[in-house]
Length: 194
Image 1 (cartoon, rainbow, N blue to C red):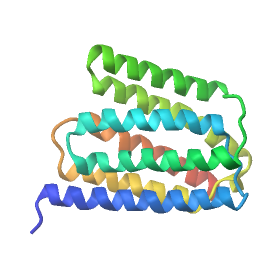
Image 2 (image 1 turned 90 degrees about the vertical axis):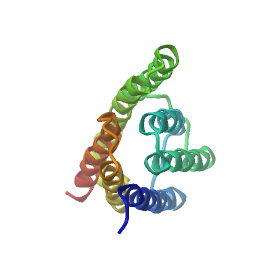
Image 3 (image 1 turned 180 degrees about the vertical axis):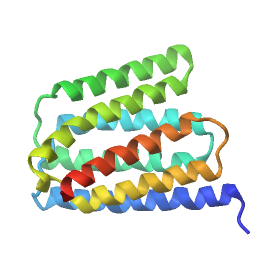
């Protein structure tokens, strides 16, 4: 019989493998010319995901729970480098600027007040706000994004949610990340397939 920690570790690894799969499919979409991402947006995402990994790791205090954010940061670097070579550099829109500012405030607040919890709240808000342009572009043209990647990411964050749940340490903040990401990715996937 597996312990809750072992179950959490297995779920954390499953979530990470799912994320790698979704990212490979997403990047293939970029390489095939079906997607034309904005380098500026990906630079903001890179900053936010890196900051998110470090603060989430401190909040959750377990490698199995922080493995997915760590891999997502690495995957974000990979996608950003790919976009650097293929994409175009456009100005940030109001949502992306808001995402960047929230990320900066999260970093400063975490440093000054020594509170990774507040950093997580601001970073999750930044991720949601930063995702609005994706939702808006899919609303106009659903074929702009690969549906399979968004479905797999929804499964990824569902596995992450259960990785937190089976070995929960009493910190509610640990749920904020997977819950926000399940909702966001499910909305995007739903818009793509409808």
